[in-house]
Length: 196
Figure 1 (cartoon, rainbow, N blue to C red):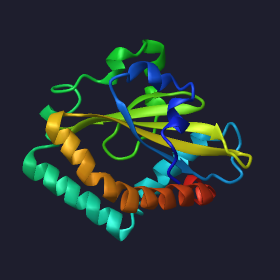
Figure 2 (spheres, one colour):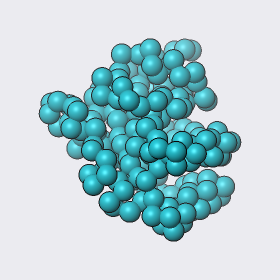
Figure 3 (cartoon, rainbow, N blue to C red):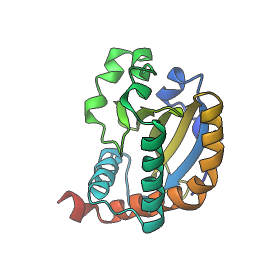
């Protein structure tokens, strides 16, 4: 479910200190019925296990295939356009005690880990269009229990990046995030099978 940006910006997440030049683009919640305060690592593991099975729906799979094809044709995703050559990793802004936790982060797709704490983790990616952060947080759910929150923070790369973000907005809201919600919530429900 889509949430107001303030559901991310008003919480005391560690990520805020390192992204003052980023905009919080999207905030989304994922139901995890029966989850307790210590289940954040189990949710991340279930999502990673579900993603490894490649369970994207037809429309979402098609959109990602189109995006990667366009990226290849236009050079958006070449290594020199990403973290390192063009964009300095946010890890350079963070203390070592925080970045040392990154090896425990399970990330989807091309995202690189920044850190993982007991109630939050962050991953980043960069290409020719944007430098982006996926922040995952673990919060008490309004009706009891706990739920996963995802915030996407972006720093567009000039006019191209701003145009790209505005063009993909309808696809994010109508296809990508609903498909991600179904996949991630199903991973939590099927966690015993996925995690053995």
